[in-house]
Image (cartoon, rainbow, N blue to C red; front, side, top):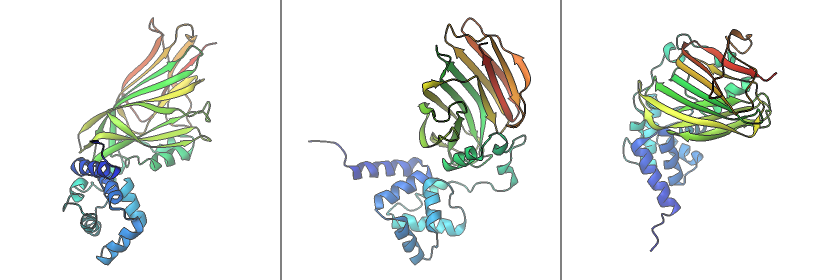
Amino acid sequence: MSTNATPDQALRAQLRQALRHGPFPAALHLAIEASGLTLDQIQVRLAEQGARVSVPTLSYWRRGRSRPERPGSLRAVRCLEQMLDLPADSLVALLGPARPRGRWIGHVTGSTDLGKLFESGRAVEMLTEVGVPPRGALTRISTQVTVTIDEHRRTSSIHLRELVVANVDRLSRCGVIHITQEDPANPPTLAGVRFCRAGRVRMDDAEGVTAAELILDRVLDAGERALVEYEWQFSPGVRMLNYEYRFQQPIREFVLQTRFEPGVIPAQCHRYARQDVSGAEEDLTELWIGSSNTALVAESDVPSGIVGMRWQWT
């Protein structure tokens, strides 16, 4: 006898898992899918019970763009639990304590606006589209980057490993972005995702921007840490003469390593910094390429802004 689960059974199993471990948007989404109800139908039934919630708001809750916090919204969530045939307080429990409000959560000492770090406002828009947490909700403690240059002097991959800490409760995701200025029509593929999973991905070939959501393997409360690992892969490779990382907040540790295939060692390589995207390259430091065919930038207590590495063969 076959033991394969039907689609409905598989959906119910995912729902039970989400109700146990979260996050709230995933549990709500799966519960709605299992019910077969549309958002319009849900809104009408909520209104009949005196809970007035708009369809866009329900969509935002379901996608993680916002979350219910006010008393009226929490009452609507309890109505949803009953309507969707869920255990009492099963969705409410996934919300955890209310998020801190006030100026501190939107501002981190020494931070800068994302708009000052990107040439195009499209990059900031795309991070919002993939559900990047509110400013100040997450801090990167350490970022380690390895750029690989192939035998044709093209960048084949950019590997990143980042240690993050939550500044609020119920943090379940982070946003990442790459800009391909040299060949916008050849965006990278997000691959090698470890200790998390890929969520929404947005690409804009005209701007050369790729933004992605990384869903953490567990929901973090304030002060808890997580490690994420991912890679941007280019096929074919992209001819790049520099790589730079953009820091919205100060970071405790930053490591940038560029690895060159034998036979394509550049004549010169240096580290640079910029205060923002309109600033000139400053603080130039010549980098030596060792016997391992790699150049290294390793720094601590890096302020917000831009740090990069540039190389040239002639």
